Length: 136
Image (cartoon, rainbow, N blue to C red; front, side, top):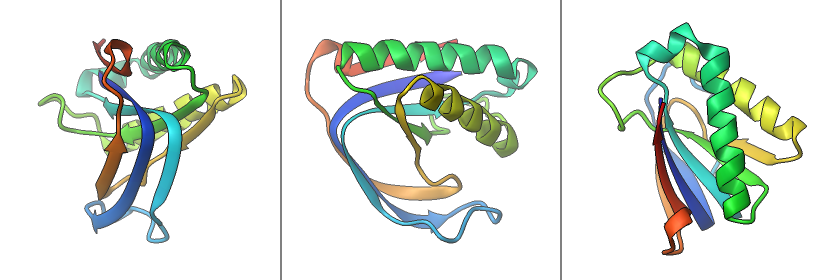
């Protein structure tokens, strides 16, 4: 897994191009403040260890959220951090499990529309722990 975490004082998206036929048609633009945005690339080798990868993902997100004084987390599929890609079905399940675990720990958790290219609008402050990269 590759994980790029960016704390955003503002994060907004607008769906532009549907790229997966099975993607939900009823998606809308949204905007959030004070949110940790996780650009996540599940890799093919992650498919052998869904539970382990999901636990590491959530652990890293909770840690980064604490360092940035927020309880809001956005999960965003971003298949541009590695040449290795997990299947869309695996990635959707990973996000579902991570979102459930985060919500059970009292985090406001959101997911960008899966299967779309999005226009992104981000305001990200420039300090050290506002941007974190992890590979596991």
